[in-house]
Image (cartoon, rainbow, N blue to C red; front, side, top):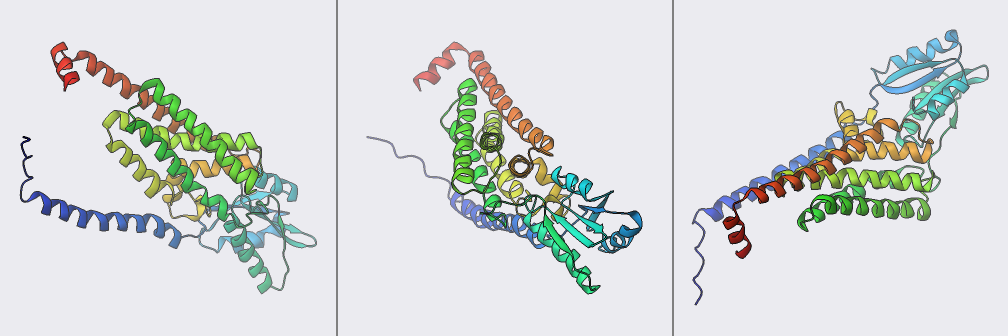
Length: 338
């Protein structure tokens, strides 16, 4: 006849109830702050913008742009060709070119449809007030099937979720050492190829090299999954929650994927580029639309996340193995019997 288990203390249930009642609203407030606050404060802040043409002709344009309270970081170029090259290198988001035929606005909707639209409104409205017509040229255009970038920005969350799921699965299944590393790398590779097949081959959202895009998507996933599994290997299951919180509540809303890092309040835009979702979105834009221009920074960020995460997985496994070996033989036998 089995002995009934001891009942929990009488005040345990009320404490848990209070914890849930308090914790849920706190998490909801954090989620609202993380996602709604940057969106509500979206505006250009030192947004890189070029001005091209003779100095005397561009002086008035620069003065007008400077009046917009630090919205733009002005880069000066000699002519239209230099401005186009800067846009293709992702040095600036667009450029105002002063020509004998009138002002011309160069944009890059592939870098950010939101910024391209903002520049068009800001420059053309100012010119319209002066009775001048501005011709707009999209130097690097977004995909025809995703002109507003909605599908592109929507890809950030699924990749983050896939990375968290892969890292959690490796941890909960008890994989360690090289087996865990192999599972993380293999899962990321399959996710990258699947995502490229959907976003590039089926939806046509991406327009660059297929394998390069698949590699970026795989690296973005691995950066998250390795961080989840790595921290869990060092501190236990709590590591899953910590990394997931950082990626979900900071990485996604701070990524700037739907606008641009310079459109978010500081230091949110900068922080977002240090986290996998923001770095992954920037790297994917560079590879898919700009032939790899400005890809070094985000690629290094993702590589560091992946390398440190995988290193933590191996370190955690080694520490556990050493602890197990250091246990006295009788204790190991009792643990095995139990």
